Length: 611
Ligand SMILES: Nc1nc2c(ncn2[C@@H]2O[C@H](COP(=O)(O)OP(=O)(O)OP(=O)(O)O)[C@@H](O)[C@H]2O)c(=O)[nH]1
Image (cartoon, rainbow, N blue to C red; front, side):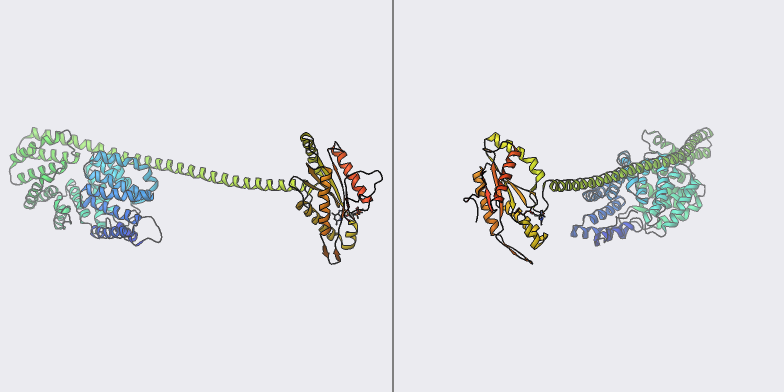
């Protein structure tokens, strides 16, 4: 039987439901007790999975021990639990159970229509005896619809699937059902072989209902093989079996068949008694095969009492049952009837009627032979069909997995790619930064000045605004390097870069030209305004003191030349040249000053030096 899926560790309710599940065919009484217990605990613990399995076990049990409606209701609830959890095997098994309820309610076609579409998914999701259960329900529908070939094929396949499990008695159900189909097909030898296997195994089970069906099947087989006396112990064993808790089971089972066996085994007293019991149950016997078998048994009682004419009449009165449109009679029982009628007529000395009955018997017998060979063919072709379906599903699944794998690989590649792109982007901006920035001070470099200054100048000219340029050169920087070392010189350069950044406007752009030379572009500033700004920078720079191991440095100065675009220069080159000339002039004039005008004698400008 199917096992609830492993969800380690199983909750207490689920563990109990599992135990109940295993006992479904082994011990019906303990099974239902455990299932009830599991359900109560599951509801208390709000354990939906355990509730699903407990209800599934209860539902499957109730199919046989209550009304199909009650069972279907319970299975519907199990189905809802599994649906909520997305548990496909549980859901499918509940569906299988519901289809079985329809079958039990004699809605064979409806049951078949419900279960056939589940076949494909069942092949994928269900394993071994779980799949056997599904196939068994399909077989049951075909069997009840009189399609013994299909029934046999499905039953055979169900046994093929479930047999390796051999754990909990489900295969006994299949032995029993398969034997039933073989009986219908007239293969009593093979049917008996399955029944014997089932009976041997059923001794380890506590399932009187199942044993009773097996015994009935063995009785039918032995009668079919003209070994009725051997069936007498089975009849007696059947009569000794306890009734199950619902009153169904052996007490209500096939008295007509037992009666016939007793009569043919030479025990007319028992036969008579059993036929009477069967007739007593008659209103409940609505199965055509059982009803006609009872007529045959009653005719044999009459024959045993030497009432030959009455026996023949009794049989003939039942003839209408054979012709009813929805007779639902199996060929086996038709054969039984015609053979009995032929015998009765023969004994009565009516050879014509006996011959006619024999011809009918022969017709049914031949039809049955054809049905049997078709069934074997059907079994082989079903096996092929299911194997193909399985193969198709496997291939689809493999394709799905391959697509999924390819998609996952693609995603991984995409991820790597976007990572690489990010890396390349970062590298690119680092390189760009390196290309436009001076490494030591972080200021823009000369190359960048060449790129942006023409645009800034053009913009200023368009707007009628001045663009001021200051070229700044640190004074006596060589001596800093010489006295304090190159590292100290670098420190000063970096500090000056920071000073420029901190003390200029957002719109001002500072550059390091190289060495200890800097440039400041000040959009919207006149040379005069720029000079004031640079003087403030000079003051700030002078205030900065540096301490090295070699000594301290204070009162550092720089010299600067300032020019603006509005009055003195029209082009980038000329503007830079003017500023540079003024810087040289500032140097010449003694450094530590900002020169904003070109003086012919290059005399120091007292108003602009910071002494
Ligand atoms: N530490 C350091 N020194 C540099 C760097 N670039 C240029 N120098 C040095 O800066 C010094 C510039 O010296 P000079 O051109 O003679 O100018 P100065 O000593 O500042 O004299 P004046 O400009 O006339 O006041 C040289 O000794 C260069 O080696 C640099 O990136 N780091």
